[in-house]
Length: 228
Image: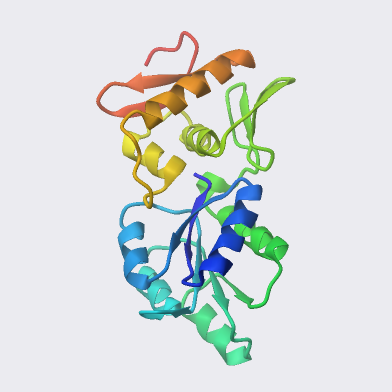
């Protein structure tokens, strides 16, 4: 899943970060408070977090401390206006994986987020592949041999999650969370429509990979003719 969580209460800053990450094929769920983030993290296993220290209901570093105390090792990038050495050291000692002082360039932020996401075994490949199917997140394209086709933002997140599952079944709720996050309501047939489009695109590029419905369980990738 190429969807991260951003804890940032400054709306303009959050919008700039979301735009920069989206251009790199990474979707973002934005939380303005620690309490909102706690609720979101309870529902989605994000591959990385970007956390501002100064939030309306506390220090973002407190969230990192709680995660580490629970043995949750999700990579965390701390954002702060503080640039003193002791602030950077305290953040790293509390369990943050990286530290970026404001102001910063969006290019650097994106590079650091991508580096953190690759720390997860599920995210290590920049162009994940399953059988004859390869995904290029940066260009938002799905490829088979010399053929390729563009993907919408939601289609990209869906197929990335399925490819990285390597044939294992992915729950419907997990697919919906990857494609649309949890901030916006999802219409009942949104996932079915998106999967229908993905199936047509797989056929268009001549891939032998199919999206199989594991009734009552979820969806998984299968090679044509392979038993479910």
